[in-house]
Length: 112
Image (cartoon, rainbow, N blue to C red; front, side, top):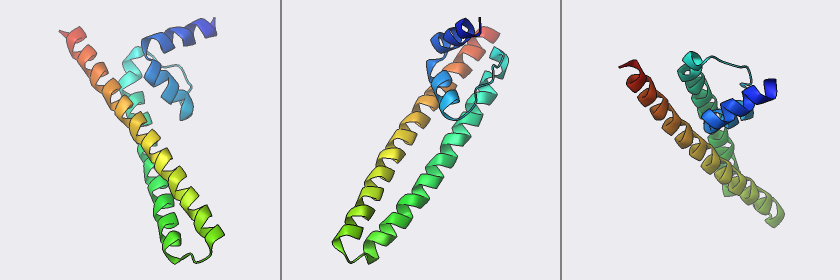
């Protein structure tokens, strides 16, 4: 029975469902709590972005002072991974912000 509930959630809110599971928000919420959950996930993504920016900044500083080729290669790899992760996080944040706008629009139209 729980599986059908999760499938229903996925069909109604696929972005929310996927991001909720990715960031550890797996409890079932009533529809009325959806806006709060969206904001919680948004803050979790922003924390991840801040963390990744610090990693990238540290790696770029290392790249500036690294002299041997192997270390430079490792640092460049870290910067590339960090850039990729940042792009993914920013994409998730954009998707989530779109979902928030849709949810707010549905709440306004349903409330009238």
